[in-house]
Figure: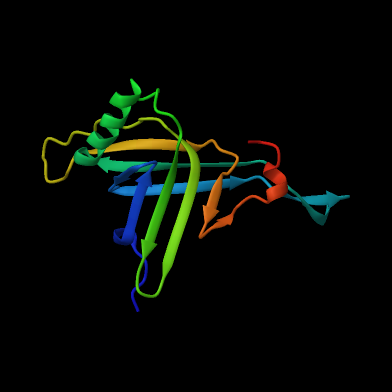
Length: 149
């Protein structure tokens, strides 16, 4: 049975299809246990954030450069929705992150010995109240984002 691996993922950044060398997307959910007199007694919802990092080879980083050129600058790039999709004959995974705002961190990492492609690291933060969907299921409850759009 074929399982989903890193090679199975297609990544769309807005309308741009790119290949990533590696990618992470992490959710921080600060929900916590409620306590009465030091004893667990239910829970409280906390704030949430999501961020990640994409690593591009130069050919795919150049696609991002062209998008930034069209926007006038890297900082001028509007937040975009990112879709990470993988499918095998027996499994499927679709993760959507909404309102991703890019930053460039590791612009160059030059190794004079060679033997490896140049890579460029681009962190991003999720900025939309639509937040994250996993296989179409919202991470946040509808009541949490009501009135935020």
